[in-house]
Image (cartoon, rainbow, N blue to C red; front, side, top):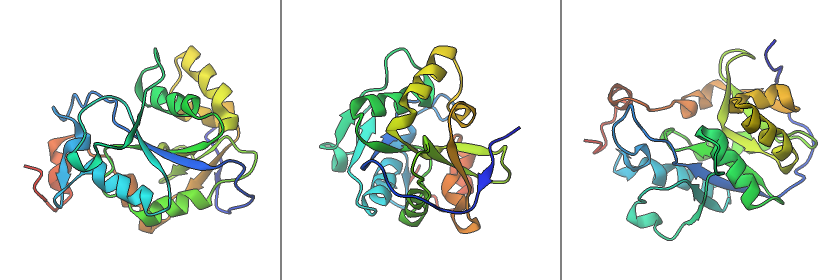
Length: 207
């Protein structure tokens, strides 16, 4: 059975919130680093960082790789050693600052808006291990972008030891899974292939 989709927002914010953009993927299907692709004249990474900073978040970059000149001074944190995929980035962020919650965002969602980030932040619930969005049903859970609380750190480490996927946190701990409002759903759209870039309908200097 999938995680229950909750539509209400309750409780406070038990930990300060930071943010990190995950750039550690190999981008094997795209053939080049996705965070450096451009849309409307700005790199994906710059667009995402801007949406996060518009919500007052201090933003770091998780993973290795070149950065655009405008972001050369941004804080960088390492993925957790020995843990592959997005889970390594999430565990690495929480290990980097155990007192904070983290808004973790993949680098391939260039349509992400400040409003969508603000909505996700508002879904935090005291006592929950995190917040994930669901696009079409309770089984269609998207772990990123997502909020990860310090209380979920031990469960995330167990998932890593078991070789589980990040979304398995929904079954390992209490996670707030929220139905993403229609006006924000495009913000969860991943760009993995050249065809995905063309489908954005902008061009924006990508080529």
